[in-house]
Amino acid sequence: MEWTAEAQENNGVLRVKLSLTHEELAQLIGCSRESVSRSLGEFRRQRLLELNGSTLLVHNKAALESLAAISSESAEAVTLTPRVVRRT
Image 1 (tube, one colour):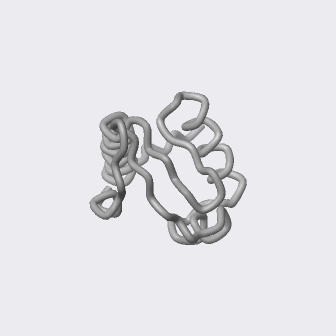
Image 2 (image 1 turned 45 degrees about the vertical axis):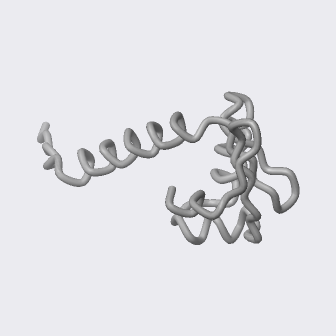
């Protein structure tokens, strides 16, 4: 989350200007726009972050970093785990 280094902080909330659409975010990370929208909605429900227009408010940076680490570890495990093919 290096991009939060330039964020403004106020009462523990990071405020970042984000000039990307959901579609552009999806293209950057290799998923669908719908997945980005669903994830942002879920993060909002969990009170981790919210997107108001072009302003991203990060309420819980530590929790987001933890989620990112877990996702990264899961992706590596899937990539590194050989697939077992069962024949019937």
